[in-house]
Image (cartoon, rainbow, N blue to C red; front, side, top):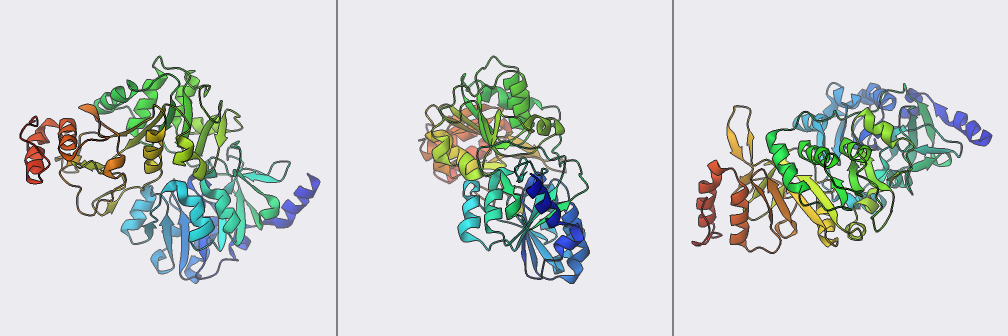
Length: 449
């Protein structure tokens, strides 16, 4: 330990000294979610007006990076997001941020084989342990691949970062780190707990929970509906549930504390809740910290459909922005307006179907209300021009709205149209029938309305 402490002090720098290594034209990696740097980001923002063509990679920013707040920032840098949060969407509207399309399970390989390696990787970590390791916190995801390929690694130590135990690729060793910065130990970025669920959320959640057997293994996406499903599971009679998920969310903590999660029936990683990254409230970070019941792992393990397929009764629950009558799901954009990203939705849609007894659910409200109070259907004849297809039509299994739950697997075009129209809001069904007839995917024998 003394040798590691000596090396620690030898590599210790101020944030300003550390970012002095950054040059115009560099690719900079900020890591992921709660691991985005704070002190180093501020130091780079102060230096940014002297630099040109800085390209930063990150994703799901839980606070607005300082570099995006620099006047005329677009003249000096661009932000490249693997998954857009609210701050990144606003930056995209200003021409500052751009989305990196991905299948999330492949992201570590992108770094190792495909994309320009980072000139500098700088991100927050938990304090060094006695063995010389800095833990990535709830951000294992693709961080090891970043560290393997980056030319320079700068870690920003934050005492508030939870230490997330895992099996592999959840730490970086001091011998691989070039510089260490001790930040101001800000609270870890949080996603506030969801508000009171709507009646639609409750109706959708009830339909899904009815389909979950004892011993099932869960994957939940982010949003009010998955949160409502989690709350309903916590209050249910279900038992011996497992967790194998991309994103760990507060709902899992509630289910675990209700005694529903044992992971005892998992075919692999028995007894462990497996996840690639986590973002939520302080309650969740406290639960993750040094908890041997959890296993932080790289996303090319958690999201590999071949791994998911090994787990019986796998239940995948994700959201949609819109669907069309062919069964195509858009979960990333509304037309050309970018909303979030593909994440691992397709990974889990594919993996759940390969699982023995597995089911994947795409859930959404049947309608949404625009800022002027207009009511619009989420189920459309065809997706709006420019909408990104997240899940192609043969891969979609269950679709759920407050009006029902239908399995689209194996259905012909007219059967799909009938099933999806039955899930639409009644006010829009007749028009959807007319549109389906015009597209020749409706039979006269079909039920109407």
